[in-house]
Length: 532
Ligand code: FRU
Image (cartoon, rainbow, N blue to C red; front, side, top):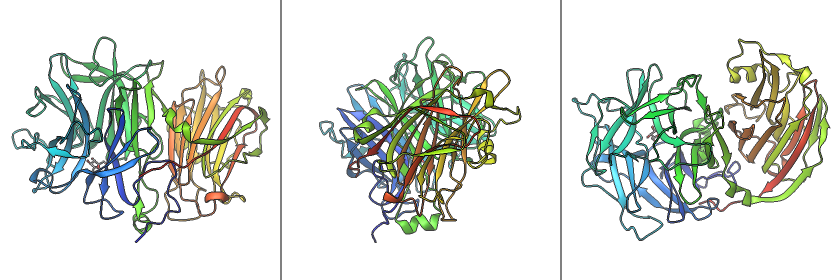
């Protein structure tokens, strides 16, 4: 049967049909971008997992290729799960991935290109030494919690290192292995890092960062910060910390104040999971891919015939404060910007709304900045408000505040029976203003079955001397929002029933009592990309 395409996106990555989850082994090789992903060739439900493969020359349009890795040997006969690519000396890519063996144990396997002169890397061959890493009684590894190898990094001692996600009881582990030849791997005595009470660490990612641009994964050295990202199976969110990698001890130590549990920093405070970065040596930047999981219940996405989307790839770098990362959609996506609408700078009074017309509101890119914020109207911040998501759900769009909510209503029906609201509220804290960013899905759809959880994040912006900016990428059933120039990101998956296609509208609004000035507002109709 043909999939139902009502909610398919126009410029986000997705296969023509069926189930997709994690992005796998992204890389740039000989000028071509590669993306592999967890895919079910037989249906819109998770299962029968292979590594599907697509390539792109411009990072916008994608061509499907044959699945690169599929179950065909004992080490992966029950599934080819997530993993990463590493580019070995001599410009030779290699894939490490998790295979599910005949006993349903999770083991790590190697695959290399059959023909290195084919830049599309269509065919991959599996190592005769597979599996290279396996749970045994001796190494005490839990056979059902041992998966998702990272991109490997080469130390100054000419030794490769890789980490594998795991857990022991409730303690999350980044198990470390070392190798001289990429084939024979020896488990290190200590994990690279671990933390109590987090549950399983899926899809770890470990890489060096700087505020000047991307760094090659092998970069180590004095003063270089690293990031460790974990996908927590328990909460289905991606958390990261910034910290130091101690090469002598092969241990990662998160910075003080950078916590790795439910209160830690997240790449995205909405739907964004099992993400992975790679270093793009052509443009000297680090790129982040992440999976946006469904908000339809399982029977409905199965009926729809497809499920799962990849977020627009993001450039990521270390913020000047060195306390957090900043993310921004890759600049290539701006090639899809078509008809542009600019609004003259104007004051948006409390209680007002402004339609942004003449753009295709269901397929758009919007950038708005707020200045001249009437800060004296800010309500006092209650010190107990430590959870931004909870704060956003208590103070939904309709709750009038001193400063805010002000922002965008996207994928809105004309009568506002449906909309997704992305907005800010500003509070007066102890010795600074606190900026809250919310994405309120509670009115996003008249379909009662979709997940309409409200999301929230604090944005480290000082409104006394900075403009407060918001960018939203709207694509039929996706709203990806970047607050404060990418200091806080929230991705929502919505299924409007009225605000579909040409029936969708876009508004700027301010329901607070204080006024704000829209200092900049540009919106673009987005063209359709050729995706798979
Ligand atoms: C994360 C994950 C990985 C696993 C893969 C299986 O979403 O559960 O841990 O390798 O998906 O498809």
